[in-house]
Image (cartoon, rainbow, N blue to C red):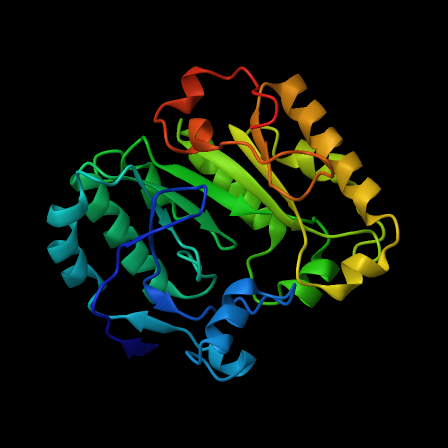
Length: 282
């Protein structure tokens, strides 16, 4: 794998998952075509040239050294570190990325910093070793379909859906905190035979669900009833989570006529699993 070096690694974040983020890889071999917001952002800033450049990821070879310098300065400020915002920490088929991710999580945890992790890859079973990795970490997969034909078109090089689910379920079976990001969720003109309830049933074991609409794709506006569609989807998610005592967050902009709500209660506070009462509008 290609290598790069950086001057810094930990950075303050505006994402709801955590107050700090790490991106220890430039690019992502998953090659998602929703389109990928991260790829478009990097292209716009001149960091990458095109799609082919993006799917040839470059690993940050001095990542661990940077953490050794940055953690002592920042650990008293950090609530949670998210892996990752512009790449995938457990990139499917990329062992070098996965190995580095495990080392990063271990180093953060040993310094009392917990992590949220989101992937379209496969979680390694090593994460169940609570002597190395904190039980306060939160592990998630992105899941917006169960149709492998849809995956081939929009998430071509990601892990198969069933494998993602099984890996997450394995972590959950060991008592680790798990969640699902159902974003960006497609409209019926992109996934015509899809049933949201079927996807929800597959992940009813998780502690929380994040749901959001698909943006940056003209096909969404071509679906004339898209506002009512997403309103109905949000209601299905809310009802499902209430019924199964799962915490949830509907991303801002998904529901029409709904004000943005604070999300800190379900993302920043540890041991959210001790209070499973659903919180409407989180």
